[in-house]
Length: 267
Length: 306
Image 1 (tube, each protein chain N blue to C red):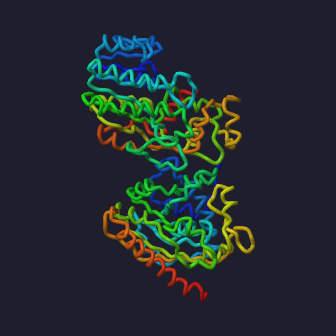
Image 2 (cartoon, rainbow over the protein chains, first blue to last red):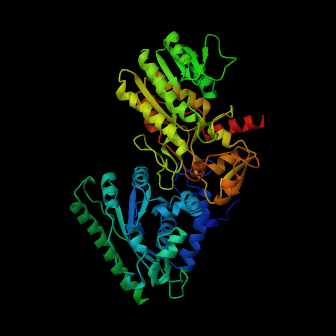
Image 3 (cartoon, rainbow over the protein chains, first blue to last red):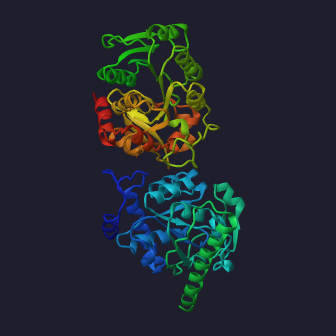
């Protein structure tokens, strides 16, 4: 069965620099046709529904390894979807941002197949190192599931950052492109997280909105990319040294959010 | 050099034998199965590798090198003595290697050693431990045999031991674990999962094993050919039809309606990929596969039709 792909996505897909074989499958199982369908669907949300605006996309390297590191915004992975869409629709040539996905997703039917075929692999250090060594673009949310669980009132705040991404960036000499994401909290205003129901579904939680269902509203979204940071080190430093470097990235993201928020809230 | 091949009557065993003869080696074999049209000069000792007659083969043949590929697969048939053949047989082979002064030993293991699980990485490297044994106890004997063979590196350092973890094979012989699974015409897939399967042409595997011998390889190595493909793509290119079955139904349908029989733990191997990094073997031996993924499936497809 052939999945529908919009013509503009098809044109961009042709310029995506991934080593597809003649079946349109790359060595990691990323499927060209699935990407086409995914980006056609993401494109509708990106351009029409969330009217996503992107600032500083020129900070993302055109080629070579890089790590996009930003805040979680919104109770489901809308932020990730929009960042992936922005790298595909705004960059020239387009790039595929590959997320580091929560482990539960690969256990669920369909989610497992779709995430595997669109390059969104389980967040394992082995995956990160391998993809970076092959000069790919990684998308990391160091807040993890703690970050998507932020409530509406907490939407511009940052919770604790994991440090694994920094050790990996240092060990692989990967530039970090910080980004601030706005609008996810507005699209999916979470008032509570239902953990028991989530566990029944195999997820960490299900976000509860004032209108009950976790269906996103057409809130405007923005991604603000900052200048690349290239922290120096080996990745084997003591925790406090790593934490200082993580905090520098966190501060940079907080700054991007604050700067964007001034603009975002007046509109 | 005299080379003794266990499991010589199997398809890959026969192909390895042909390569060794072509390279000018003398070849003998041990197998429970006869090989009626074995090439001239190749003596096949019809015996179980754990039996006295197998040791006699070592004594009379006095091989310089041994290629041990007499292991039983886990994914298709449930065999009562599989455990004893895989582990007991491997121990017996290495004991004999030690006792009869063999200089080089190659254990041909499987890439399924690494296990299939939701949280296991793509492209396993040789330093990774096996995963998923708790859900697939049937794999334990192959894992144990693999690790046991590896101990020869320090227990019997005078033998150059190579442990090869090889991907599934496909090819004209229609033999092997993956071929049995793809015997069709309908191949069951678990709805919502479509894992990468790593495979190589059986001729390429035979070349890789012969190369390991030639290069006197020492250590543990993954052996892979072309890039892996999703199971659905393999099924399609083999001219077969996928049968998408929801997981809860899958267990009860196995072994019925012409679908293959599988142990319960094998389900993870149809949900999640086992993909290996074969770069270390390629770097050490200069191995290059001669058949890409399409030629490999094509050869299998033609054999299915023939």
